[in-house]
Image 1 (cartoon, rainbow, N blue to C red):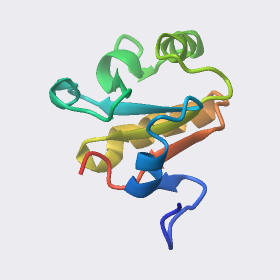
Image 2: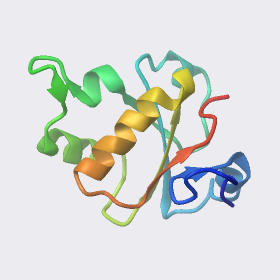
Image 3: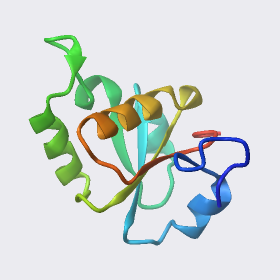
Length: 118
């Protein structure tokens, strides 16, 4: 199900997420600058991405390299056809960053959980 009035190809709602929790073609990823909240609780089967250490290159002060990002996807159990659903804290700010990186590096099946951790 999509969220009325929003980017229906990008945002999914909680009902859609609940219906796809056990879908092997979908991977939920919580993206935060501090993964403490993930460690306390998260969606079943979700993996955590840390914005500071995994999505950014602190030395170059830039996004992660294509090679590093590809390795992150692989470690997260994500293949080229895996649909990624991103969510996180801070109104999905870091999830939106990860979404942009996915698009930049050509991973098309990606969405954002509307509302994030809320």
